[in-house]
Length: 71
Image (cartoon, rainbow, N blue to C red; front, side, top):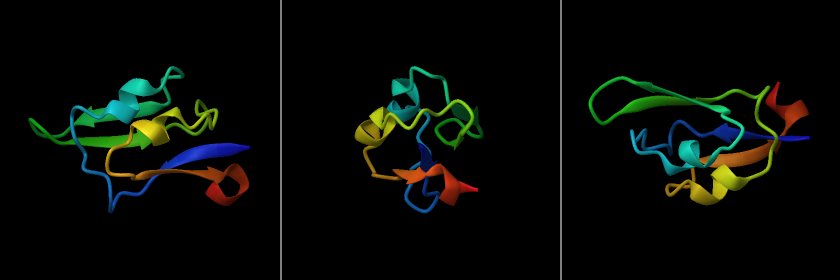
């Protein structure tokens, strides 16, 4: 089974993250830190590995990996 993983070095931490908004499983946690920056994380228990968020991530910071490798 696959899960989404965010590369923090690539993520632009935009408060308008289209990848987080695209997740119909509500697997993204978006916490506002400043007016235009957020901390974004993925709840791997909710993530189904469907890959929709990967397509919506403009900077390409989200990749799908095998869950065994995510541990």
